[in-house]
Image 1 (tube, rainbow, N blue to C red):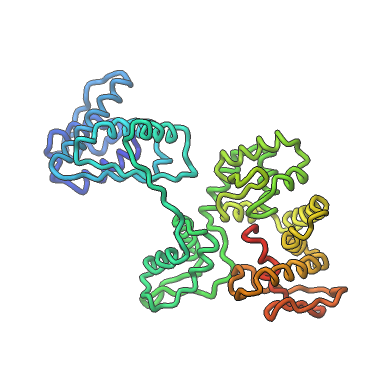
Image 2 (image 1 turned 180 degrees about the horizontal axis):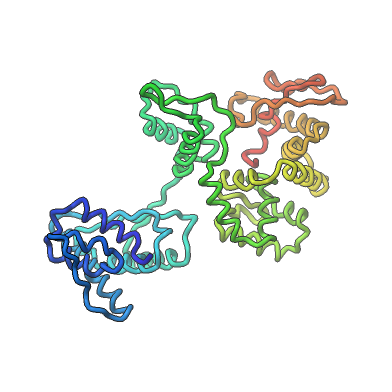
Length: 414
């Protein structure tokens, strides 16, 4: 609806500030927006409905509303400083954006400050045009909000659950690993855990069940689904292969897997970038914008699909990088393991573990990524597997393979 965020703001302001109702500028602004806010016509004395203003053609009507609303805001600013906060500008309609540009050009002489927020990965053409106007006319200053650090996520969690500094907080690392410090994702993940009963309020305090693997919140799964629904079948195929390949994926691998010519494949990847699903990291490598995006797409696959695609990717990697396999041992171990090809997984896992051991010889094992912990491997290895470290031993028909060593050199690829 046109003016939607502004009308919400106006309704909220008038309901919480009844003392301003007698002011003529308030009556005028209500009259101007009466067709869009019929309920506000009864807020004046006696409940008598207000008459609407005389009709004008659509463009003139829009200009009149702009002028009346601007006069109302600046008149408030003449009495006391006004901070106008509008969030989630990426969802705003074009008329609201046009008004905000109109207001921004006229509020410099008044004690009126606009604070507007939007998601940088959801900038649509209308918002992009609006931001370009502000930049060109030097009407605004932009501040980029970076992702939270691990310690900042902990502070956020403590604030949400009202935990004192002395209280243990085991949620921090799994929540940070899942959300990568995105505050919105942190909130949605907590909502999901509370809704599932994993975190609950009892006896006047928050408590939790033992946490297993954290899953993608349904709200984020739905948001990703809405974006992928807009893609062509070919683009979805590329996206699915990329999700199974890992958080980061090589163009050469997708080229080999899809058998698409280079230019058509590039066009499909550009569509994924335009949909805010992936980003370009270099000419040879791309990555999912958020780890949760990749996980949401991956979670939508059947277990049998994942297994088949992991095997296909592993075999393609062997063929594609036959001359430089040392650089892909960890990738191969990961994909063969997920494909249930235990022998090959252990073979490449041993090599990857030795590489990781050499690379991290002076580092604590605790530095390895927390989600790559022990995995039980069932089968009969045909080779005498050796101890890779004090914490990762591969021996016998039933072995425990600490995946943290096998995947240490992935550096966040999966």
